[in-house]
Length: 209
Picture 1 (cartoon, rainbow, N blue to C red):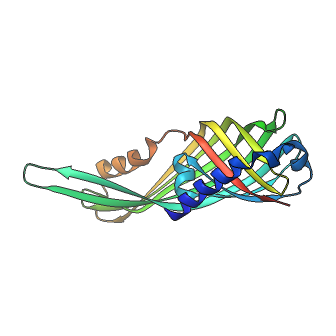
Picture 2: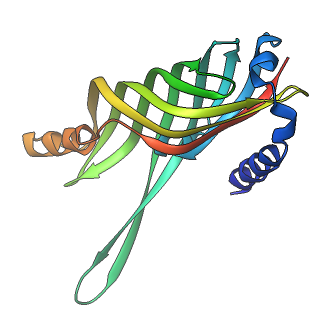
Picture 3: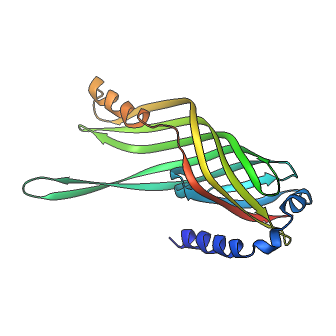
């Protein structure tokens, strides 16, 4: 929670300092590399808060993104006599190769190849325990603005980002119990129902040198 508040507060401060980013194009050109962090209204970024290493330029920026984190999912079951809750923890990781093409000073088209991983080591179903490992590769593209400040900092806001699934793979491994066709089918369906990830108001910020 503190990490999310820090991201929000720093983003607000950078927004109010826009007078230092009058020449974002020139400021980008003067930098060799920059480090940052990424979050926003996007499941993978919100959970994994990935770090960025980027190589900025006047018209193009390229970079790599990586992060991981845990997502707690609580389900509630209600019967006539009682209500029970169960919390399951899923591990998510983000890895991306990214690029930006700038149209003018700050407006840009962000794009990239993303490799997302969703994993659970102890998914239980009908007395059996499974290890689920789901990998998805997708193409991302969006629209955004990015301001690079005279003092070296930068703030990017991708107003919208869409995704198109290129491929995915599910690995299901029995850890405990007797394997049945019904149990394995259910375990596989638990992951393969996932669609390509998209989001909005994706914020990245950091410092270049």
